[in-house]
Length: 163
Image 1 (cartoon, rainbow, N blue to C red):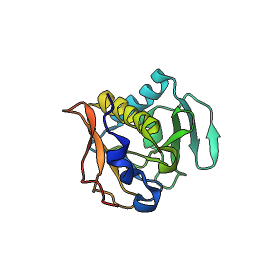
Image 2 (cartoon, helix red, strand yellow):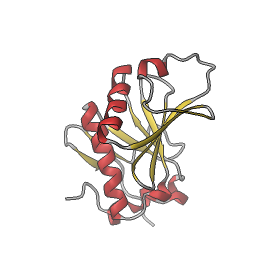
Image 3 (cartoon, rainbow, N blue to C red):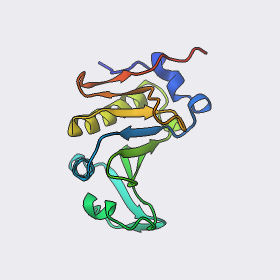
Image 4 (cartoon, one colour):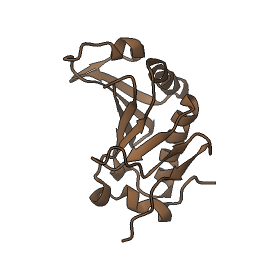
């Protein structure tokens, strides 16, 4: 059974209403949590690409401790992950206290893609035993949906917008 139904949440996936690139985050993290996500990407065999600035580096991805301890003025490190073809999540290694990544709502249209996205959030949330929250682009701190670790599923965290 689907965690969420497209007809109930489609407003949260409308790029015109929410911005095309919502912020997805896991608060209350550590370097060990980052490493667990890197290990999950490898274990699931998800296609990925690691880069520092414009320089794409060979996989496997360096250890999280190494990436997160880079100098503050170093180019941004990011990991692009494709859980399935045409669905991309871009993880950015800003701080160890929160895992954050972007998704493109234009890639997440319809029930099938929503199920893929919910499955991806579930995988990360279960791996860490933590909530995974999606905020509208620029609306940090106001999640609309997310993986609830206690419920072990993706749930709505805001009332759907009336169109």
